[in-house]
Length: 218
Image (cartoon, rainbow, N blue to C red; front, side):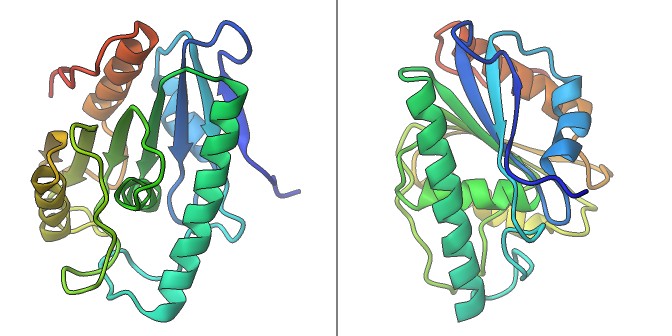
């Protein structure tokens, strides 16, 4: 029987010191993110919320396709869902810092959430991500200055080409984020060990009440 609804993991309840919303990619699930990412993290004190796309994808088009009306509508609906789940999660844990993270299509959705001007997380990790659409498309540009952002890509990735990764890095830099962008040579469409280490570092800083240093080794 197919799973429905979001997944909750980690340190839930009054012992939580920080929050993480982790968004899955196309044709993936929260359970896959749990096994591929969360199971590799050492993150005591972190409560995790993993949203679920009802159709198995947050939008049908490729991230680098031009934004047509159907894709805009799907993207808007997914951003509404993500925003509502983030708001509800924060309401359960008032005052705790939150890392918004995602992989592949989930990373792209997380970037668009941040650019939309929605209430910002304390940090953002877009693992194999880019902006949705092309540079010629009308897109939101309301990203808050100073937001700590970790952006990654792979030079052989079949879904997020290097030019889209670079365009996202440029957009993030022009908005004045505290950006670290890592492009991994030869990496498959997966989350590498160095990315897991950075997620752990970001979460450890938030748990300790420190500004994220983005200092984990490559």
